[in-house]
Image (cartoon, rainbow, N blue to C red; front, side):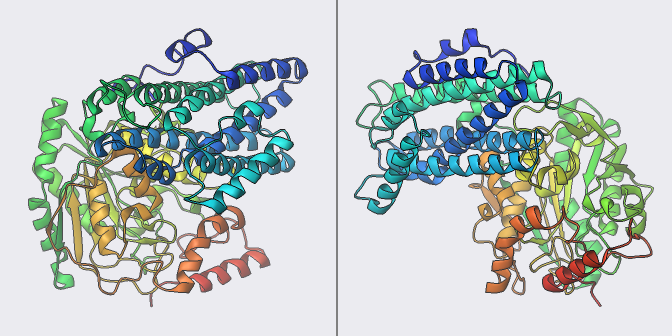
Length: 639
């Protein structure tokens, strides 16, 4: 992260000479760790790879400890016990939440980096260290934040885990001294020390990586970005410690306003959206979500045209043109539909209706927009089937019109340094440079996300999606999406839920009996659009989706949504948790896909063989596995 809304000062300004000036003098934990690293310098003087591996494993375990220890559910419960106003609790909660999400990103990133360094034995070591970190983080957090009366069994187990860790040298004595239930201020002071040790570890990793060149060229820069994060975390914990008494109240003279001011000096993103000087980001802005309901299929185009005239997209385009200082004829509009998961013309439940896309483009051109681009990007299917570039799939499904040009986002990638997040390094130029961006999603269920709508629809505008799914990933899929949304958000969102929508367990891939909701959704805030549509799709809370939960963490919002038009649940919709078997398969979907799908090779729809033949002839095991999964998931073309 950067300190200002400009976001471009970079992490290189953090160095050993200035880092410790921002917090109180170091504690014993930092001093002991510094001595330990000095011993490692001597031990690995002639073995830089072993040195880097040891540091990476250590960093992974420590990042996992704090990513568990800072978890939102625990912090909310602890803050509820403190004699603070709701306003102050929310300020502290958000600061800790931002640090927690950082630490989760760091843990995933460094695990992926370790996977790039070695073979399966090293991967096993990495998983073991991450598991140890998770257990240690849980035990430490229970001891620091849960009293004996509240949870005697958890406290007993946590105490036993800590003692075993101390016996085997995993928990230093100076750390054990801090693992007690006490004032929140002392927890903050301990974490100032802990964040300093993390900073030092990442600093040493950056030095070795830059010299030894054992990892990709961007690794050293990424390590320095994490250094910057750890610095900010230490500064925030120091501010919280200075603001609280040992009775868990604010010190005299401290208030919500002064606390926000001090935290915002570290970064405005550590304070709630409503407290930031600038909160103009469209995601989380809320506002009106227009929902229109048709009566019959023949209403499809007349109703869509009426929606475009009434939903506010005209005013949004004109505002954006004015903000950029361009005329309508000079602006570029980028429309991101979804059609690359399409596999057969007989199943249009997973693609944005091409007729609607053409109608939208025609509407924009009639409004005066000079350039309209429809952009999509390749997905994992091109690793198994021929003719799967964007233009070929667009032609197959009828995405061709004189009103727009088709852009292959995979071929349009350019380097980009993101303000926040990890392991995403490029963006599609057309999406990045567009003056007005529209996410035109399709209503679909998803076994992991429950609903995959307009927010997730921008997924492929950066790196390939498979870079953020499998075990060697260095960023979670939702993090990669948030990075794109943060810097290149859609200015408007449309959701096609009219003629054919995919429900059930794997609706995101296809549906043998698609529903006909006869609806459209539209709004300036894609997150608000998805929240409303998700509720109509029987989601109890939009945060059940990891993508939407991440969006709420990054952008806030959710409190000021106004539905105009139809606000009723879809009576016949089958969400992935509609019965016990589907619920169980949904819970297993992610680990099975990541670890047991052969990098997706077992989870393939019945592709049109004439349009998209296999790249290689199926082996007997592939033939059997793919057809078994299709049968199990009910994945077949509609009849």
